[in-house]
Length: 255
Image (cartoon, rainbow, N blue to C red):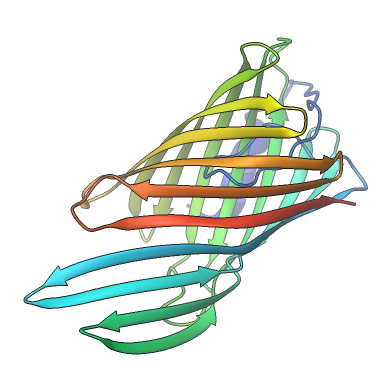
């Protein structure tokens, strides 16, 4: 399936539907995405500072530990009242591998992505929805790239339970070299106090001919003002006996 076909599908799926984007919010730091649209003429810049992952493996008396730092980023700009264009970059990455006490450092650049996100008006004051058609272009260096382009179509539905709690779920369908993958991400977003809020999410991913993967992530968000946000997050893999942790910091701006 070509990226153009995904874009056409995302557009035709909302023919005859007039969308009204909710108040703008950043998509960081969760794995899923929100339903808000960047206002026309504005630019949202969401930057990792950085994101870190840690894995550990034991094979044939060999102990391997790996730490990766990643400066991922996402740019969003409104092209219509209910549609935005997204440009992403996995960013520069630094990798340190320790095997039986021997350390090895590497670095490289990750892939880029382009996407179109469209909000759908459900005519409901509490429920909102958006579609995201995206292509990850395998332009990164060896060891830091998906190697083959990935095309995906995702949906996000959010329901505002009350002023303090919002529940939601993101569903993502991917295809890479004729191999399919599906990811489900139920999410809880909650206001803590004043400018502080948080989120928790469960990520379940099943790729064709591969074992399922799952993780549990949580984070804190501090709204400096309406245009600047700071975030911190941490997560752990749940689907294997190999320790797998992820966390990091980020900052987002709306210009």
